Length: 324
Ligand SMILES: NC(=O)c1ccc[n+]([C@@H]2O[C@H](COP(=O)([O-])OP(=O)(O)OC[C@H]3O[C@@H](n4cnc5c(N)ncnc54)[C@H](OP(=O)(O)O)[C@@H]3O)[C@@H](O)[C@H]2O)c1
Image (cartoon, rainbow, N blue to C red; front, side, top):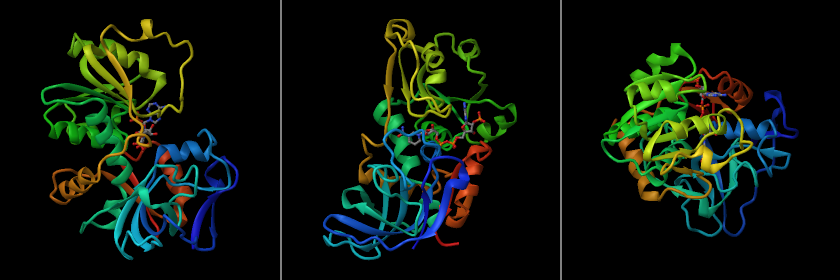
């Protein structure tokens, strides 16, 4: 099989496409024929050597959709459609940047759909992250105001749609004024241009602050996001687009306004249930949600796909198909 392997962390040229032996499934591991996978920012960080506890060589890729090729335990039928994400994929063991992936059976979500592999490939990690952040962590409610910091990211774009479908007012950020239309066309109510300090601009619209904040830029802007939050509101840090995991001199009594809640969502820790996953696929099929797929690459173009992600010009999800 073809696989994109990283031997040394570094630039996109370090993603080496090579022929490998097909992995052999034993006990509760399942061989999956990968059809498509979404590209993730965390894979860019892993490629650069910024993800803790990843050893090399490694086949990256924290998610995929495909068909079961062989399940020695007999739980899945050959050819059954499955999705997989996180749980150590592409970090602790080889992931989805390959024509086949050997995955723990417990990670697999069987599903039914008539969507194309391109569309299906955009869904698993993006949906799980958005659903987990908005519903499990922030517990969004109809009528609330939500600030999405990092609004043009694929997670930000889908979060906007799901929050609007739930009846929230959405404010979303970009650092670039020319991306304002992209956000408005996606349903955002107020676009804020983010230079790292939003509190004043946001409080000119909502003097008390907003009810909920989805922080996708990370620790670089987290303190400012906390100050944008109304008393009794909540901030969920889900992303770290600025590529910083931690902040120096964090003093909770100074950084967190009284009664504001700070939480995080990590798709590796709390997984969405299978029924919600299948229901989301049905909503996409019914046209209730648009996936905002920016561009599709083939596996042999994996370096170009990483470059495109780092250009910050995607404005949606990047998908890789294993068959050109
Ligand atoms: N916690 C979890 O379980 C989980 C799961 C999946 C993803 N994530 C995280 O969620 C975030 C979004 O992921 P994604 O794949 O949707 O990203 P993406 O689509 O690649 O995001 C691209 C956008 O990021 C913005 N951006 C890039 N660098 C930035 C910086 N230094 N400061 C502010 N904005 C910056 C750019 O916006 P502008 O140019 O418009 O400003 C760009 O449009 C990532 O941090 C990712 O790691 C977390």
